[in-house]
Structures are given as structure tokens and as C-alpha cells.
Image (cartoon, rainbow, N blue to C red; front, side):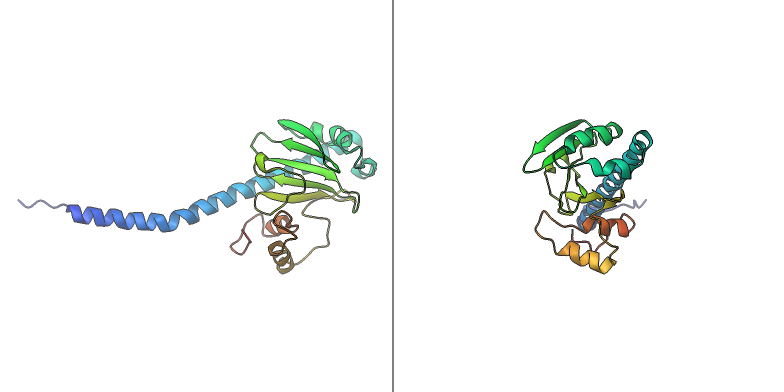
Length: 202
């Protein structure tokens, strides 16, 4: 009787081919998985702050009535009264570095730093995917991202600017003020239906 089977050489060649295919595809799969994790956290943060603002409005009245009361000097107290009760966090720290910043950690390992900008009256949020990367005024579009509450009470990705085209957003995201200040990247991700596309300056 003749027995059918694979020789050792055939098995080794097959394993080698599988190894090459895995080596070629795994980096892309890992990168896509990491992007999806980041996008999920960004969407969650956007939802958390929007929900906090709505809940605060129920208890404290129309947001446009209590938003103008905040200054940089009283910002920590304002945050504690109007936003903190409606956001589930692990810890909150006050940082004074020329401005009064509030730094907050979430239980999923992310966090944010926020403060009131006196020049354009925005309330800026510097969201960090990992709390260890949280620092005031860091928004590099990779580990940290920019959000803001506008003077009219809207919570927006990036700043309170007029709507820009995707091409404009992509250009501005690719050409930051510095490696820690890429103003328009968060808005680009939102415009792309909360996706990090292939042309995003990752």
C-alpha cells in the first residue's frame, strides 16, 4: 500500500510562506487595530463632554447663561461646579502654569487637560489617549487631540472655526505650528466619519 503525506521539506516551505504572509500583513492589521482604538476613544470623549454639558444645563439652566461667568482665574471652581459632577473620572488635579489648568483622568486610561482661553474665550480640551501623555496645550494629532467649547455653547472638535473643506483640514493638519500643536486633526477625523484614513498624517 502507498501512503500519502508531506515531506519535511514541503512542510518547511509551507511554514515559510505562512511566515512571510504574516510578516507582510500583521503590521497593517496591528496599525488598523490601533487606529480603531484611538477613534473609539475620541468618539467616546466627544460624547462624554456633550452629555455632561446637556446634564449640566438641566440642573443649572441654559448653558449660554452660565458659560460667560468663567474666567481663567475662577476656571477650576467653574469646572468643579458646572462640569465635574457630570463626568465620571478617577482623579482631578489643578495645574498652574501661567493659566489655571484642570487635569483629569478617566478609568479607561485616557484623560484630558482643560482651561479657559482669555484671547478667544474658548474653553480648550486637550484630550490624551493615554493619561501619561496629558500635558497642557499638547494636541499633536497622534497621542493628544484638540476639542473646545465655543462661546455660543457648542462643543466642537478642534477650534471654533468656520467649516473648512477636507482639503483645507488635511493641509492644516499636515502643517502644524509645532509637533505638539496640530489644530485641525481632530476635526478632520470627525469629518471622515470618525475614521483615520490612509492620507491622515499619522
